Image 1 (cartoon, rainbow, N blue to C red):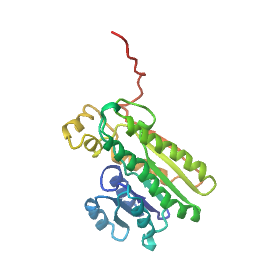
Image 2 (image 1 turned 180 degrees about the horizontal axis):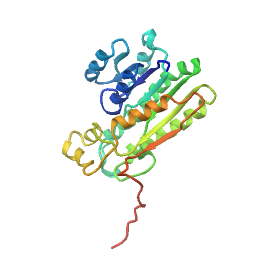
Image 3 (image 1 turned 60 degrees about the vertical axis):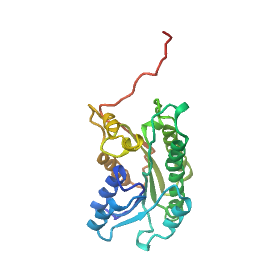
Image 4 (image 1 turned 120 degrees about the vertical axis):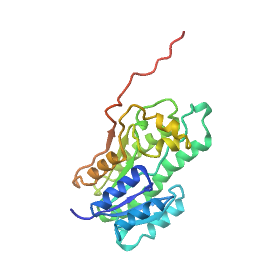
Length: 252
């Protein structure tokens, strides 16, 4: 299998770290980007010369462009972009949610993803090959109380992926949205509940959720699809999670 160059955002923990580890372990070159890079040094040391660790805040449009422009020559030809950086903040209903939380989710999940994609796409199109793999969520497809802006940002990711494929038809570049459901063993819920680890842990009580390794396995599978195959989206849920009835509020 030809060695690929993979760029992963939000690579310091959770899905991003598992994805970076998966590709590095099989011999690919990995550009691991994150605001926090300390956790990535061991990965770089274990795969000397194949893992490039870069500090990057995807919300910073100028920094994103400068980082992509300044990639070393042997990391410039990106084959797979994994837009993983993202977060959920809070679970309050819309009427009492915090606008700062909404701004942060929009800036990271939407604007940051768009900035990185726009910086990487021209090179892919010029080479006639490449994949953009966006990490979405089932929250972008199915509403739930308190999901308000988080769900809306992931709906944006889903539709942005569809529209990328509309623009990229016959260029050799394709896009996929990976949409996980309940997934444990990451910082996701701890970040959502702003460090309340007990509340975060309670989300997974009595369940066997997806893991970061499950997501990394799926991303690897996508990266290995033949060039003529486009997978528009993949929805993933653990076996303990499924669909439910629509809510009906009845008068007492």
